[in-house]
Each structure stands twice: as structure tokens, then as C-alpha cells.
Image (cartoon, rainbow, N blue to C red; front, side):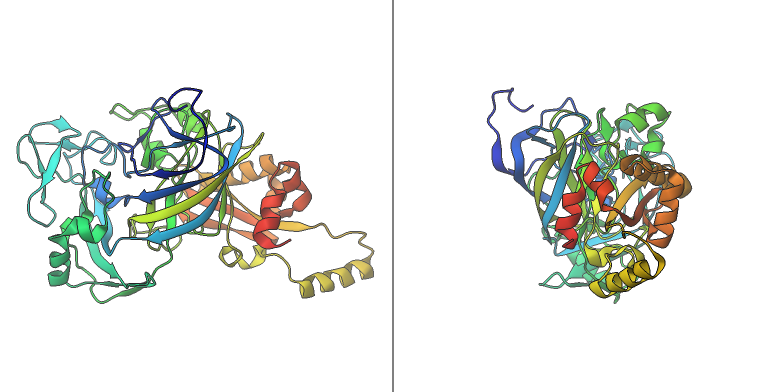
Length: 438
């Protein structure tokens, strides 16, 4: 707990501090914030900026975790996402490759300079382009990642649409990259705008911002981007300082890195608590992304975020549950309309069905090293949460829902209409009623 056990809790907290891309339960947290309190943060871009900043020890730059009063191991924290606003003027992204010799096993976690053999070297920017990041010690270009096909995109004043730019415009922006990225003052990353990619100019995009990272602190030190079953698998048996076993990954991760596009303003996310105080953190805001994030990366941006947090006691599973906006639900998982319910009642009367069970949408997150294993994980979690067999969850997700892909290689959503009584039994029913007007 921050500053000792006598520190009074606060109703709200403004977060401007960032981790060194490692979530460490032994590190001091901010707060405490009272149960029901508000967290406001100015977040830094994830993915590409940290990926080209070798001193950062993970693929993102997330906020320092916040201690939530009353959150104990085995509980959950319900996070109401009140607002997400993009502040970047522009960003850059693209499909990547990892050149040989620039890492110790994992370019996200242990970048190295092959010239002086320094792991996590301090670096600086000289000029623009993909060789602009230079080692402070020897002056060598340090490129743990390269853009194979990429783009620079700028956004309109209302943050509704974006447009990818030609080479000259991308290079103009690269000359003042930190300004156009709107990097927060506490951020230590190099802006990816410095690379000035411009392989598909003149393409319009819709903006639909969401949080790629939102959750609670894992119960052992873990690079932030690897706090999930798919990326976390890269830590198993790794040759660097953050190597873990498969058993440790399953026990300690909290799946805060989901890249699920429905984790956006208006949604409610319920996250497991594995350390005292939960340690709510966030980052990796995306301007938009299609399901799967199939390029490996999307439009990472700076932005402001407002959350309200609430403790849920005795949470029965080890992963997140999401109550998306109704418009983000698969068609079969949306609440039945009054007209549909009336037709169902006529069927019940005709065939002697005594009662139609009240149903409510829920989305259970599954993660693993690949999509098939992630589906199995999500199904097992849903069954445990609701006291069902996996076979029943499979049936309900088939006729009243869908399996959705958050991120390849291994983040999914098992989204379906579940019996409201089952949600009430685990303390989640009122979140469904609030979200869907039931």
C-alpha cells in the first residue's frame, strides 16, 4: 500500500506516472483510492513507441498501478469506463519484423545493441527514419523492430476520422514527433512518428478509440505487454531476466493486455484481484482496430481516460469479464426486444413452458498461446463463473452468442446471453441490468 497503511483514501486521483514497462507487485502503488472512486490518466502510446525504445522492458508504457481500498486477493474490481479521448494529432504503425541480433530472446522485453552488447541500452534520436534510434554508448543504430509495411496517419479536429499521409508529410511530422504524438511529460519512449512510414497514403480510417491495456497488477513482476496468455507464453523458459514457468504464468497473470476493441467508453470491465489493492493500470490506447489486430499493431495514441472503480467481493474466476456496449454485442447476444419477448411468451403458452428464464449478455475473456487454447480457456472460465458445464456454455454461445477474436494469436471473448440468476449468484447481475436496462 502506498506510504504505509495510514494513508487516507482519496475520492479521485490523477495519474501521470508510468512504469518502466514492467508490472511489479513489489513496487509502490499510487493512491489509495476509495471504493467507488475515480481514476483519471493521460496515457502514452503502446506498441511501436516502446518497441523502438530499448531501455523499456516491455512492449508498452503503462500507468503506475493504483491501490483500491478494500480490494483483497480473490476479489475483483469493476471498472466503469467513463471516457476515452484521443489527444495525439498523428501516429504511425505497421506490420513488423525483428532483425537478428538486436535482442536477448524477445525484442519486446530484452532489446540489445549488437555493437556493444548492452541489454536495455540507453538511446537517443538522430534524424528521422528507421535507423534514427542510436545507442548512447557506441552510436550504433538499435532496431529491435523494423516496419515492413507501414503508414503515418493524422486525425481531424473532432477525432472522428484519420487519413494516411504521403512521404513528404510523414517526414514533416517526424521532425516534431513528440508534439504530434502528444507524448505525456512522464513518458520515456521514442515516438514511432520518427520512422515516418508512408506505404499506403491517402487511406481514410474511422476512429473508434479503446484501451488495449486495462486491468489489475499481476502477482509477480511481468513485462506489461506479456500480461496475457498469448504474449506471456514468450516468457516461459526465456533467456532474459523475466523468464517464468508455464505454471507461474497461469497463476500470476491477470490478462490486462487484451486488445479487445469493445473495451471502450461506456463498457464495464470486471478484473480479477491477485495482489492487495488490485493495482489498476492502463495504457496502449488505440484510435481504432479491427477484430484480431491482424497486422500485429494498430494506431497507438496518447489520450485521456476516466475510470470509476468498484470492488466486487469473492470473484470466482482468474480472468476478466466484460459487459460491452449493446451495439458491440454479437447480434445473437443482444437482449431480446419487447416484441421478441412477446413472441416467446406465446410459444411458452402454446407448449406448456412454465417460465422463460431471464437472460443477460456477458463476455468472458480467454487467453492462451493460440486461439484454440484461448477458446478452451474462455469456455472453462465461463463454466466456472456461472456454475455450468463447458458443454452448456458451448450451446449457449452457439445459439445465443459468438466467439469473438480480440487479438491473434490468443485472446478471445466468449460472449452470450447467460441466465440472469447465475450472474446474480456471483455478484455481477446488477452490472448487466445497469448496462442493458434490464
